[in-house]
Length: 359
Ligand SMILES: [Zn+2]
Ligand SMILES: [Zn+2]
Image 1: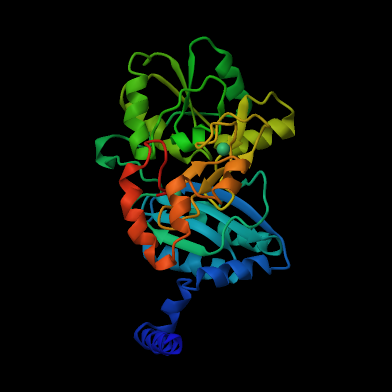
Image 2: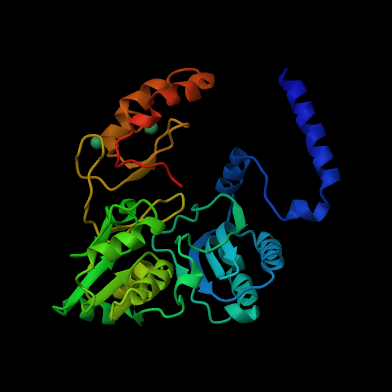
């Protein structure tokens, strides 16, 4: 039976090779998850995790995407990159020995020659297993219609030092533009946070919270700065008069406070969107285990596959429930695999509001 399935698959893949040109197969990585993971863990070189973004007008999105994918495959780069007619947003890991080649190539693309690359803080080099370069409508899903307002009229970029100083002003309000699962494990002292699950949701929420503060000094921050580019333009469009944003986001801030030995006002962990799910900035633990309420800041995906909910779990509960988010998921995970989806359908609508499925 299994052999038959394998033969069928082989024939199918032969067919698809015939149907697609050889080139097309080079433009995507369709390898099995297990193989990708094994390849990554058997590598005998180091990787550097980094990120960058840039807004610029791009006309031939597909060509740009394909050229980048081919070049980066050659450099053995892994990670997730979005390309849209409004620019590029990349989170990647690069073999150390190829970093200069990558950097030179990036700088050779005229619109990217001045791009700021942000290095990861805590890097085990295993942040990504696969290279994905995806064409999107926007590089960050903000739910805004560009024709509605001037998205180039952004806030004032503040360096980490300037941001610290501005926080001391009585008139200032610090606003975390990220989602709840990011701000709950780490944030600036006294920052306003929202319960948003997406950036799209957070923009109107922030505007409503600040409705009576249009003359205050607004200090926005996010992970690497990209969301603040949109959030600041959005607030300025809604008549906020003094909108500022942390240049390079939390990632740049954490590097600079270390390097320049300035006061660190960010406490806890910086949530990141890769396998690591967070980089520790200070030892402070601001959140609790969703199951037993003990202090914990370890995000995890429920190990019962159909559930896959993102939540916080302490070490004891992780052992007790074997990485599952609830008693039900733990119980269901003991059933034969083919029953998993059926079992999951029984509970999926009863999830507590705080837990979420990764998007
Ligand atoms: Zn617990
Ligand atoms: Zn679960």
